[in-house]
Image 1 (tube, rainbow, N blue to C red):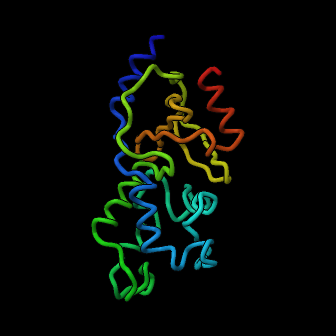
Image 2 (cartoon, rainbow, N blue to C red):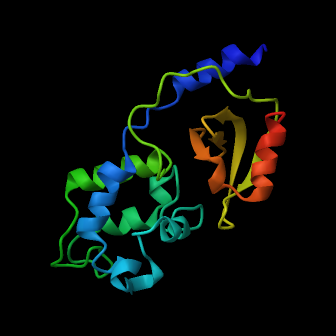
Length: 192
């Protein structure tokens, strides 16, 4: 039980999740990206679709165009920031470009972990479900086979708190977004 105060302190220090995917990011994708990147419209230019959770799972991962927690490595953000005259800019020159506010919102969402279910202020911490045991950096794999290096920091609200090895930020990852092996790894680390 000596870890509970540490865990509560850790939760209090987590950045509040201020960007809600459904309310703030999905409308940007709808207005600026779906014309060329939507399965529902029969268009997946560059093999990228952004309109279904299944397609988003393919692009939101450590090796995809959206790297959770790392805007600098997120190619989708990079190409949205390119100047109008760059041939790789998205949306393409003359199309419905993202505003500075939209780019900023997208960058914040990625930095916060690119969650499809999170958003709004993080609720006040309740009694923790599990506490973080002593342990080091481990490989965690998503349900679509992508992996990242992070330290187990606990479990909360049906998700796993992972501290990114690359930048030390902590993110809540829904347990269902992890591979069966990583789900077992999390449960074992939590003593479940």
